[in-house]
Image 1 (cartoon, rainbow, N blue to C red):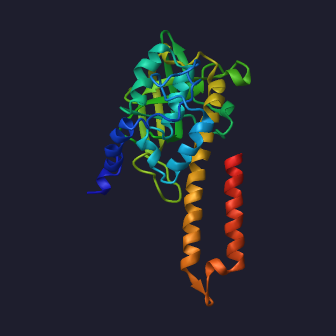
Image 2: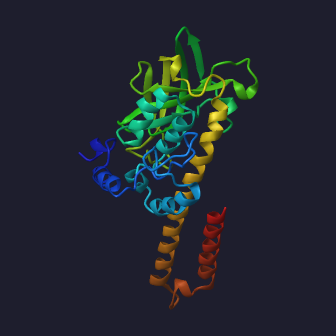
Image 3: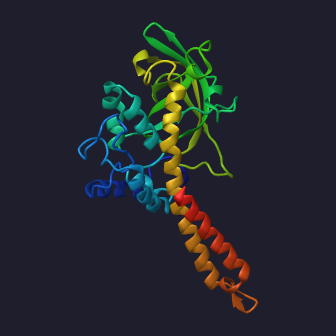
Length: 289
């Protein structure tokens, strides 16, 4: 049944991806400096700046799922930039390059149910070193992408040193999704919707063991990485949402010309004109910001 296939990749998207790659419309999000040096078209991305990427993200944003067609969807974009900026050569070979090819997807495990996670210094998940391994324990939620069966890698944030200065206690570690002890508990709902097949999941990490070489940038650098990831991640969302807002305004204008009340179209009513004009101003202001 259709309900049984809700957590599988959407066929329409998968059919469009090869066409996007053939047209050179692939990994458009990755700026030239993401990996610490100047990219060329033969390197990770095509080398667009955020300013150059903005109108493309706006166009993709008109249809919420379309950015995945071009391998430009969250949380993979933020995770790919994070590994490109802060990962080792081994990390890039094993995880970044398959993500860039669209062969797998990823999740970002930071937010926790027990603490106010909007401030990353509150994170309480434990990352403890034992010899050449880290032992990871913690419960995460709103882990974007964890519901996708192609999710193969998590970027996990936790504390490696609770006695260090406040902003140096955290670290980020790469955790393969099939590691023993990783359990996707449930999808979380927003207004009753679980956002299948992508999903924002609650994920339990119990005595999860990974090599110490899976740490990004080094112990105590997690908060620093979080800030570096936050910038492009948020601005990409904003770029896409401007496109969705433009589509919404277009639909509002169409509706206003088609609906009649008291002998006139809604578009002829003063209050409606005011609201449309206000919406136009707000979208233009958001684009400038």
